[in-house]
Image (tube, rainbow, N blue to C red; front, side, top):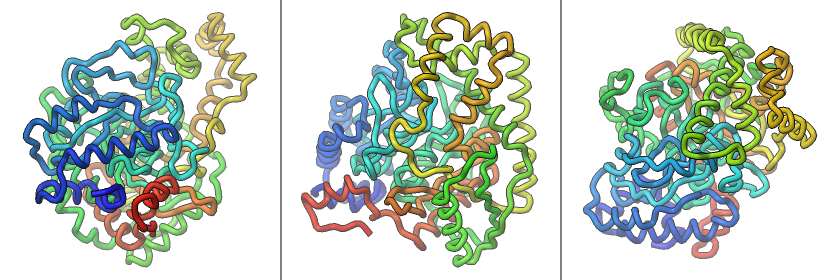
Length: 509
């Protein structure tokens, strides 16, 4: 098998080839490692290689539905025993877990050959992947643009052809955003569907879910079969589906009623290409016999953003405390995290509790919407994948905030309530490109980004579907239907096409 052949198979198909003896797991690992070496200097997707661990895994008998398929995990939350989990921060380099995260154990039990960890922004806090620790990751569709975040390294690795599928997690859009940026399929599961244990009960108070980014819907369905299920000590359990997702995905979803909106819930601008992406999806859906009309949940989008950001800010002081306990100093943390840590530390417990309580309001409002509609369709991103640095604060503003933070004045002003304007600006700036994804996280509902649109400049721009709690089966069925109607598997990034041309005449559809 050469690289061109490798690209023509998703993870499910590669596992079948290994099972039937048409290729060995060792050959597939060699291909994945060679491809990473070829593109690493351009996309910087893989931040830590685990080749010795992968070779040791191959020396044992592999079993499971994806036995022999090369795989990458994210360098945050997904602990691999004996290997540092950095969370993209210099402050966490000393954290070396002693046991696998449940999801990593399940990936290994499924036979996936884990040979590396993928790049992410510091503490997974941003929708771009640009940590000082590892350097920024680039989008294989255009190296001058971000692959998104926080699972940006995973998305870049899949889009570049290193692996057919890679692990991510999603606390505010961190699977769906990079999937949309890189022309991939990305599903975040319902709260509690997949365990975050044993080191963590619920990531970000349950806002975050584990999952994968893939080139095919059936791979994501099989991955959910592997991941779903209760672990001892988990806060709660969701009843399993009547059949495996890999079987359910092939069933017709029936006629669905879908409401769509292209209006930013926080009142920010939505790029015409993002609107066009939704309009194209609407046409496809109607052509497939679904009932689609303009409608959105009746909730306060600005209040939802405020609630999300209070939780977002509130996580950072805890992460900084973990780093400090490991011996990290202030210089080991980037400016953004230091600023958010100071702001987060100024939030009184009562205010944070009040904001957490609002999640119930948003969940009830979305449930009222889902009483009338099976799904909500929106852009995944409000803007095509941005250029590197495009979303950064101006240098002057960064200088002033850095000075205030280092001097201690930022904390004083925050505690006195004199930074409301600054906090609101940070909130608006941080979400203006990604205002659509947080709804699913706070309500705990499943959501997916589907690659149905490419811009005039040739950049992917996915659309998002939000389903009822526990309705991953319906989302996957619809995604499979859309995949058949508007195939994307062979639509390859220019960087990947370049790699194919060196060994084959395969041309992306």
